[in-house]
Image (cartoon, rainbow, N blue to C red; front, top):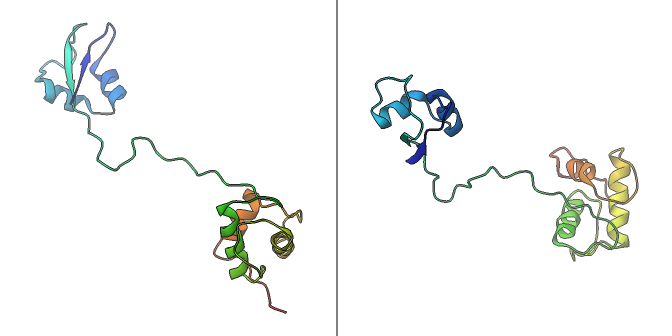
Length: 140
């Protein structure tokens, strides 16, 4: 439960909108009988839901997608190498180092999926690489 001090020009409707509750919820919490009568300075109890423990207060936005290229050293490179290995494009250690072998595998994948062949793993490559229908490579 929160409190709110009525300001000049406030209505139950605008207060309800501001706090995301219904007019009736505010009326019930304050025993209001005339829903059209508020006085500036009047203190209202606002029944707002308390956040649940462990639930984020703000929505979590999309996670940043790392752009990887030769020379990158990162845990995301291990994920890249693993996915390329599972699809048959990469044969090597999962060492997190984007070297020549990883770059060749990325270029093979880009060629197989009609993406621009530049050896850089950007959002477009990640999207295609992580899709359930990413094409596997025939082993030689």
